[in-house]
Length: 149
Image (cartoon, rainbow, N blue to C red):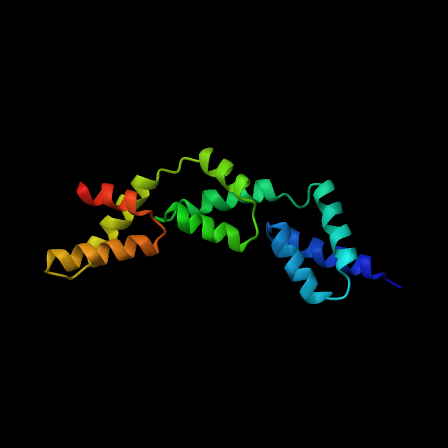
């Protein structure tokens, strides 16, 4: 007869073999399957970290490298990483070690939007651009510096 811990381990192992996942997301997933076994789940996660099957630092680095390929700002990156329960210090460290340049990213996003923006009034055009860039997670200071060019 298979113990609950063994079932949890197999389920967790199956998940981490398919894709990288944060500890937070794996905890949520396992709690969904085994709602009354939080103690065994936490032991499983600790053991997976010990044998390096679960590594939030490496996951954060890979996620940041994936996210910076898209023209999005730091605020959006923080939102995406917070959803996955990642530590802000890990995120900051991964961003510093990456090739991310927020101004360049903002400029790319603006260039793409300008190609599709059909607005004749310059004030409305500027406002639409600002709203678009804010929704992409760029800070106002970055937006203003890019718009001045």
